[in-house]
Image 1 (cartoon, rainbow, N blue to C red):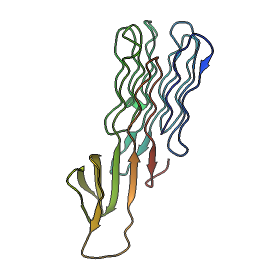
Image 2 (image 1 turned 90 degrees about the vertical axis):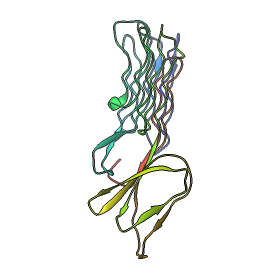
Image 3 (image 1 turned 120 degrees about the vertical axis):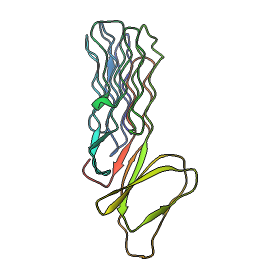
Image 4 (image 1 turned 135 degrees about the vertical axis):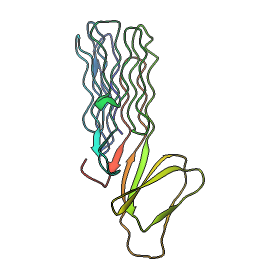
Length: 219
């Protein structure tokens, strides 16, 4: 997945986390800064997290838009960096789905559920360690409507029809699935898989988005 943002520091720099190749982007660098403290934003599927700088708060990297469900939905935004008590605001979550950083007595927020977005970094004086949780991930399959899925009882899923295809969204549970039909032609299945996002850091760094892999559309 994407890397988390580097934490605020009293000297030098703290590198943001590296991304897994093909699944996201790196977190922004945290560095020594004057007001506000300069933590880095978490990486998103669409861009790296912003680096901290003197007097600047860092936003999380943007997510990626995908239309596998038939609608345009954004996934895997990075978490915004937290900051100290200041009038400069705080780091915002990428694409509005990553969690926002904490600041000025407000707690960091969590990444949006079922998008794999990162949580916001903790802020001061609300408590550096009150970071936001990462948003849960999701698995989405798109396949010909002549098929249906046989599943074990622990998987939480919903299925809709989009044109000549079915779209099944998995949001919880585990297990293996099988496709069934009265015919046995070759089947093409498109997929979107987004892992759960990382929680924000205790010293302000935003959480990285979960890894995103898809066969549907461009990344």
